[in-house]
Image (tube, rainbow, N blue to C red; front, side):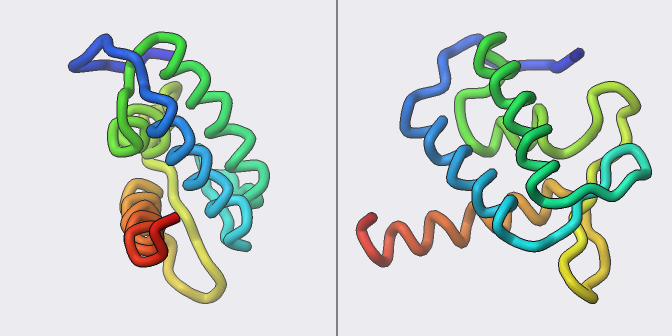
Amino acid sequence: MPFTSASAAEMSAASRVEVEVLLNHLSNSGCQFNRNGTWYSAQEAKAHLSKKLDYVVEKKLATTAEQFIDAAASKSSMSGKAYQVKCGNDAAQESALWLQAALREIRNKKAATGK
């Protein structure tokens, strides 16, 4: 998997948890995930992105949730095609946009509840 990185630092435990919360959010969303022209369930998307998370953590290619989205969750490392997310009757959108919005929502909820 060819990824590029501006940093060779470790992902903190807190950032790893944040990405895992984000992937759980995707898994529970009921949305569909397009990878290389094929639509997958949100649970299949989580499984795929979890493998990519393990890879980028092992290779020290991402230290934050945003870097993970950019490095591994926005496009195929094989074809270079952007991933897409489609929820219900809404138009499909690039996964990077969907994941960034979900991350903001998760952070806002955490800030509001203190959890």
